Image (cartoon, rainbow, N blue to C red; front, side):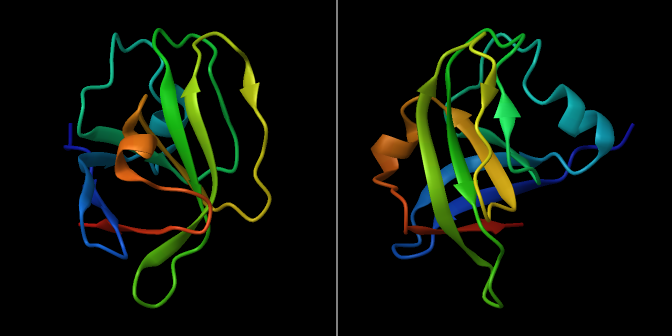
Length: 125
């Protein structure tokens, strides 16, 4: 089995690290499974999915969701929507128009990083 590809999520304005290890869930199974079945998402970790919507079914813990637009030539992505502390088992999270991906993070990460709609982030290898 090959190791999952990962990236570092950074605030494009400050260069500060938001999450040290973001798994890039690009394949069918990693997108299908997401974070379901996990007991937790440790601080500093996350999951990037190239999707416009997510669900919280079969989740055991709350998460933050950072919806991002397409990357520009410098690799920066605009933050199009943020969802704080999505509770487990609450069903679908509404689609975000224009989003080309979502980063799932431990609850509280978005607020701690000071991210909001209009911020810019990078997923660096």
